[in-house]
Every structure is written in C-alpha cells, then in structure tokens.
Image (tube, rainbow, N blue to C red; front, side):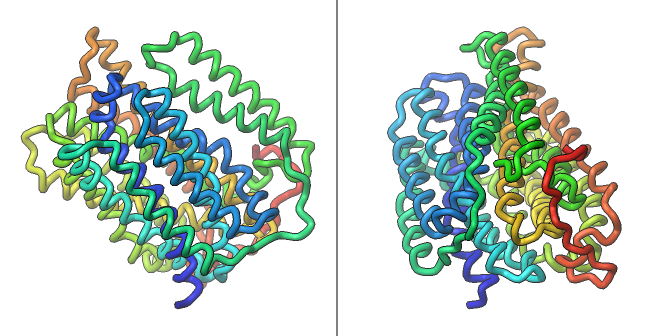
Length: 477
C-alpha cells in the first residue's frame, strides 16, 4: 500500500480510539453525572480536563519524538491513554474521574501529534491533503460509532463499560505501530525548553481551567478569577521568554507565516463554536427532549457521518476552488448549521434533525480539513515538529474553550431566570452564541491571498514559496 495511505491508516487507529472515547463520553454525560451525584453542567470538567491535559503536554511531543524516536513515543502514548481509560471506568467520584481524564490527556498529547508528525515527514507535500483525508476516514468512525454505541451501553448496561472499549483497540495500535511506524529521530536537537514548558503549562492550565471553573457551584467565583489571573500572568512571562529563546516550546514566530496564522489562530474561533457541540447536543436531547442516551446517540451520530462523507471530496473541492474561497464561504455555511441547533424542538421529526446534523458535519469537516492542511503549506521540514505542536495546542485550547463557553451560557441563563433547572430555551441561546463566535473566523480567512496554499491544492496559480519561520518572535505574536 502507498505511504500516503498506509501510515495515515495506522495512525488513525490511535485517533479512532481517542475520538471514540470523546464521543461516547459526551453522549453519556447526563448518566455519568447522575451516577456520580453531580450537576450535569459540572461534568464539563470531565471534558475540559482532558483537553487541558492535551494542551499542556502537546508542546513537548515534538521534542520527545525527535529525541527518543517517533515509534517509541507513539507506542508509549497509546499505553498511557489505554491505562487512563481503564482507570476512568473504575472511578467513583468526580475528582477521581477528572484526574484519570488528565492521565488520558497525557497519552493523547503524545499520541495524535506524533502520529501526524510521522505523516508530514514521510508523505510528499503534494500528497499531504490526500494523506490527511486517509488519516481521518477511519478516525471518523469513532464519532460515527461512538454516540449510538455509548448510548446503547449507557441505556442498557453501565457507562463504565464504555471506557473498557479502548483496551483492545490500544493493543492493536501498539502492534501496528511496532510493525509499520518508522522510528524517525532528529540529529543535533536543541536543549529542551523546561522553563517555557513550565510557563506555558501554567498559563494554558490557568486560562482554560479557570474559565471552566466559572459557574461551578462548588467553587467560589473569586477562585476561578484568581486561577485565570495566574494563567494570564504566566502567559505574559512566556511571551517574554519566547522573545529571547532560540527554540521555545511554543514557537510564536511561526505566526508570522500568513497561512499558519490563518490556519491556527483564525481556525481557533471556528473551533470554539465546534467544541461546544458535543457538549450541548447530548444534554439538549436528553435533558431538554427527555430522550434516552441511546436515542440521543442515534441522532447525534449523523454529524460524524456527514464529516466522514466530506473526507472523500475535500481534496477535489480544494483543488477546484482554492483554500481562500473554500474557507470563507464554507465558514459562513458551517456556522449557520451550528446555529440551526437552536431550531430543534421536541416535536421535530427525527429525520429532519438527522438531516441538519448530517449536512452540518459535512461542511464542518471541510473547514477542518482545509485549515489543517493550510497550516503546513509554507512550513519547512525543519520547523514541522514545532508547527504541529503549536497547531495541536491551539486546537485543544479552542475546543475546551468552546465547552466552557457553552456551559457558562447555560449556567448564566438559568441563573438569570432564577432557578436551577436547565430549560430548552437555555440551549437556544447557547447554540446562537457559539455560532456567532465561529463565524467571526471568516475575517481571518478574508486576509489570505488568492493563491494561499496553492502548492498543496495542486492549483496552477502562482504557488506560494515555502517560507522559513523567523528565528525570533516579532510583532505578529
């Protein structure tokens, strides 16, 4: 099998496990909250703690892969993630559950970015769009299978069993990685940026986790704001550190490259809107509509099914219209489908909801594929590991922010109303807010030149010349 297909399919085993885990948990959140005797909105910590762990540990993934070998790090990451899954299935309190989710995140932080780095270094640039599509086809089976499977297990058995599903998948991933993943290393590595790791870790953890604590009844508001303040101060010092460090853990100088800036910073706003969906949809269908977890999963899986369909057509669409036009037009369309969640009503035919989610997933997937590929259009091979780490951190931070925003809107509307019950109208407000945030990313894509990413799209317009990232952080940061 060709390299552009074989390696992505193997890496997709890990991504499949991660995506299956995430979508199953989202479907089962109300049941997990009831079993742990917690408010459903409090379970946002189960989602944000995992994403936070990813954001904190992803920056180290590229350096460790270069130092110890991609195959070694990839296999170790799968083992850590699988161990965290086992412990999550044994948790009996929210603090335990959050702690084990953080352990899972430590594994996921190395697993997916290192796998993506292997692809980017072994596949020719002109085949990257196709290779990324092959990567996500099996991985998207997780979100397709996850909601109905998780709903079925939660409704008819016990939610704890859903975490045990990762154990056989993890074992298969380790075997395939041992057999086929190349053990790529880099010579003459710079020293590891321990100071940058500490500052960025505290900064990202403080900002994301502090924001998630807002609206958490068990914690006073001043504590949440104090955590946010600590995170902001740490990130301020990190920016100063990155200015004078040759190889910082998060290379902010990469933001001077227009395609990387648009594909990472611009797409982050869009991902804030998208990150809220796996949290909002199951809660609305189960708490607002009164559906069982299984019935809820049979509806929400349509979004992933639509996304999987897009993977077969993403490359031709980008080649035909170019990155800029696709990103601008598709951003508006995909954001409109996010807002469409506010139109869902208990009496609405299930087929209508499935159709909306199917089409929405189709357009969201096109946006993801386009921004992911565009981010690396002008990145040199030497800077690829730093770019993948940076992009992965931005992605996880924006998605976790989306969960926190959605939860904060839900909690804010019920507090404004004066009772502790979540009403269907609260979800309408939340869907509208996150859709407005997502559509704002269009302003970043409008700034792109017409031929942005032309080399990846295999278009005949003036191809963008590869740009070497500057050695120091400048005003773009």
